[in-house]
Amino acid sequence: MYLEKLLVTLLAAPVLAPVPSTVAHQVVAQAPAQQAPAPVAAPKAAEAPKAAEKKVAPEVKDLVERMQSFYEKTQDFSADFKQDYKYKALRRTQSSTGTVIYKKPGLMRWEYEKPSKRTFVLAGEKVYAYDPEAQTLSVGRIDTSQLSASVTFLFGQGKLADEFSISKGACKDCKGTLLVLDPLKNEPRFRQVRLEVDPKTAQVLKSTVVDPDGSENTIAFLNLKTNVGVDADRFKINPPEGTRIDDFTKAMRK
Image 1 (cartoon, rainbow, N blue to C red):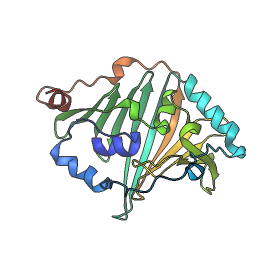
Image 2: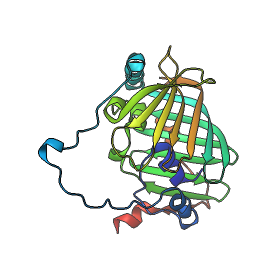
Image 3: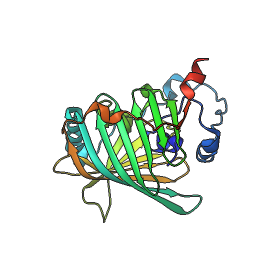
């Protein structure tokens, strides 16, 4: 999973720094250009469009509130993960496994083990991508203020009910309750978010982000542990001598 794909489909956030030319085409292929809407006549006062109504289905209201509260109280967590990215246009699935750790405020590390070793670290507004096989470390920047609540609620920030209409979905194979989150406003980064939540603990067991083109990025969290005292040093990357470092944040400041 490349840096840009990780940000666009997992974090649902735009990349603000230039990206390596070797992988830039991956983003272009997945993110079609946005066309400006055609001008329309201003509606009469009586016909003014109404703002999207906040809506949480009654049968999941309690679970959504408990889930929100759970992550607001969570200081750190660690888990194994299995990621399946279904490319709709190519009709194929790319599977990956690894570990993830998180610590407030805003530190996250994804350690991919299979099919190849890669490390991604989100630290504040910087993102680091380390490829040991290519011996490269890329540094980019994102605007964390633009992160969707579908991500920030995991950090104890943002309210899902402020950005999504939330309903209960049908799922035969789910171990928990499936929540279907549809954006209240037009969202160019993703079409829908689905969260499988443990009804007892209110923890997210699996998350799925549906891209605008219909591709699906699903991450299942296994062996999830919370508030275990994750050390901040675990979010540092110390590449071996000889590693090429591409710091695109410096290019932005020029």
